[in-house]
Length: 458
Image (tube, rainbow, N blue to C red; front, side, top):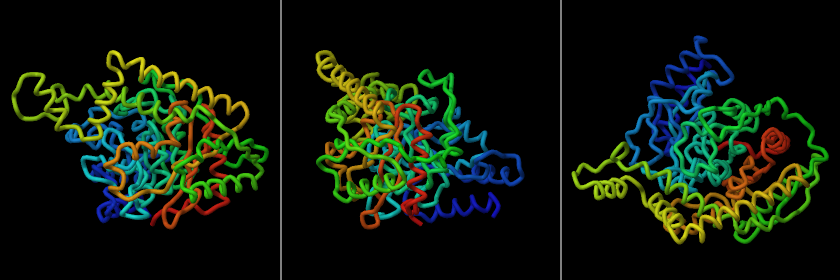
């Protein structure tokens, strides 16, 4: 099959789909890129391979909305660093994937363009905020995808949709061109149907970028070529704190069964405890909302963004633009973040959150002195019904309980399918020390090749 034929089949699958996984489909661009791959004008490791791009990542000439009315018509004049890397490797950008508005959510229900659906059950959410990216890969509407992860936004939908997703070490992948939500925690990362494909995509997008002040100037490991390394004798920690109240017994059992598989392959697993994790959820939301309050201040409709077509004084115009341009969840987080940063409350909330983050980071570093990697459920339960939690913000925030500690500690974590509850996938996350992505991929690959949980939805 030619690259053009493959891309036509993919575009047809998107057109026939009920998932609502894409906000913008790159019909003309994708066809042109596929044709160039067929003639050899485009070459590289991803020549002719379709990649879905989370709609928070800037793509030159292709609409980037962040799933918000505020940026409904925004077309960036430049490509993000990761997009330039994809072009260099001949990738076909198939389109911009659906997401929670400004990456704020765990279900892709807060999108201005309507909720995305789970390929395994159209009545369920795909997870979020990178739900469209994971759903499109699971349903073969894209070969690969990019997401971003501030508190679990790659790993959550990877778990719910039964695909592989990596939250890299903070600074491993440039954030240049990523629309910011929580600067100190967010990372762009790869999503794929197999561990090896995910590893290849990570190798391509990782690397130093002088345009990003947080970018790490360190060599990128050849993860895909080291997948055959033996894991015999590997020390794995199993923090009991990730298996607490609210974790579905089916999820716990699947994760522990997965650990048994790794032990059968020669790894040694031991239970441990990380007492500071009880502070993680509250510390994360105080800090993330505070950063969101600052980052989203630029969207006022005066310089750019959605603008109400009425002439008032500056204050009223500013307020009306933001009131109509942002959705309910974004406004909630901006208000809470502004409150946490306000005079008299900064020390009470934001400063305490930073101190808790320091404790959590120290707990992870202590754990990695004893263990090569940590294993935990990615999500406490399988995908829930659309509409089930969206009107209960606290319930929805609790979805992130097992993923946010990783972002606070700035360490990498890889979610890989490890089981099913009925038809719905279950994911486990493999957590490593900073810059240990190659080890995580190898553990996941050893698990994947000895199980059959990486079967995609169609």
